[in-house]
Image: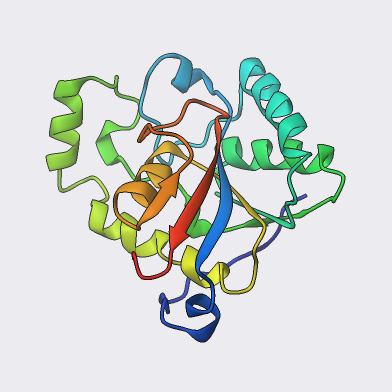
Length: 196
């Protein structure tokens, strides 16, 4: 069962704990499939559970993750991510704690939630004042830097928008060459000191 929330704090990338580390390695997995994923719709804050395919995807990923030295799982509060995190934790021999972090929730797509993902809709969405800005998303996700000061073997369970922000705005390098992830796709992330 998910434990207490990890709060957001102002980033302090110049702290001794961070500067002493040449690079930080962590793992990131996108949640398993939901019905809206299957139908290629934006979900954002819409709180849908995993469908049967998503459950199978999470269990399959859990078998791979069971071989990794995970000490803590941090998950978005949305149910699709929490379900994925719990399924992973249940199969891991180290029984890592699962903590909820509100700052890992998906980008707020406002009136575009439930809409079909098309190029035209994406352009309109990114220009809309009713949608969470990338600046706002980047600012809240930067809270991850504080967590890395006290934990080295982390698994993040979150969303495609969060992953894209880590890669494009926060200086993380992914083991995948794509800027988006499939459902339940696992990658490792490296952040070199000073690339914030």
